[in-house]
Length: 378
Ligand SMILES: Cc1cc2nc3c(=O)[nH]c(=O)nc-3n(C[C@H](O)[C@H](O)[C@H](O)COP(=O)(O)OP(=O)(O)OC[C@H]3O[C@@H](n4cnc5c(N)ncnc54)[C@H](O)[C@@H]3O)c2cc1C
Image (tube, rainbow, N blue to C red; front, top):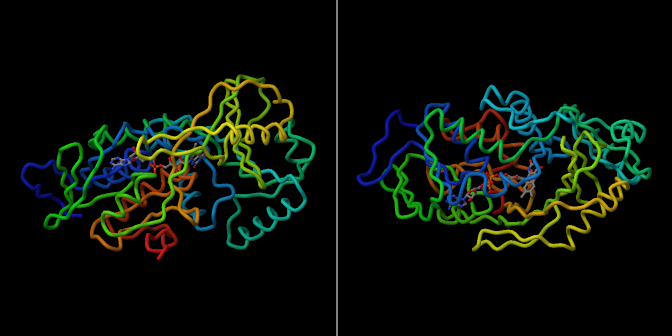
């Protein structure tokens, strides 16, 4: 990146324009500013409006695609010392995460996974038997056969995390424009010009962190990608007496489950509603919510009859192989993509923002990002 920037006349200039004020855009902006860049974030609505502000808050290395494991472990380290990075814990609770097996066959799958990870040198997931599961989760149903456990995982508060990163970025000079949707990108000489809400912004680099809308940006620079927007559903129950400390997932069916300090229980884990991309809105599907609630009741039978406070849908970009795009553009100079986190990007954001900053400032990263290249779908 050049030490100084030349702005085209009539434009607002910086070194890097980040498109998208979700957790990834803001984390990238923060790490870029820490590296000395002048950064402008353009957010179409408000920061954290979509997946980043409304997700389940799971800080999970457990059960990750093997390509993501190094990134997830690096990010988890940052979660454990978030106050040093952003001056706030973001509500992070190192509660541990557990993934349950409900049959002997599922337990064998988990056993094979842990053996594979161990062979690759990873020790963060531990196979546990049914008795150990019951020690961690006394209220769990008797049919559970065991599970895997990541003691240093946990959960945090999504909107608080987004806000902490935004404020930390702004404190060191990042400019955040909300209500400013980037419409068009074009190269003008050695720089990018991005038009948004009738204004023109200029920068040497662009970061595409537009979440479920990012494939539209990629398409503009001749890099179409098969990103699918999906509405993921979550539900919060009424308060019940404390019975569950870790975050709980299942192996054979969708479940992400946790109890907050105030007694409410969050239920989700991948059940889907419908998306209206033009309206930028997700709708709940009650049949899916009911199926999700049944899973929760199967595993924690005492929750039968507990009332629901509210349910909602958040829009997330999914890639066909379930792992994100974190990649320099292959068609355009000085453009870095970071999107398609496929329902597990919250945990990754603190470290992936650093990777994006590395890709902008040096063209490569200390962490292995080859599996996330944008041209892997061709
Ligand atoms: C219900 C739900 C539960 C989840 N649970 C978990 C979990 O427990 N753990 C976990 O790790 N992950 C979880 N995730 C996934 C996680 O939330 C996402 O992977 C992550 O937040 C993606 O962040 P992002 O910044 O890439 O995208 P987003 O948060 O979608 O941010 C992208 C932003 O870009 C803006 N934008 C789009 N187009 C433009 C444009 N042209 N110009 C300007 N701005 C634009 C959007 O308005 C949006 O604010 C969950 C997701 C959902 C929906």
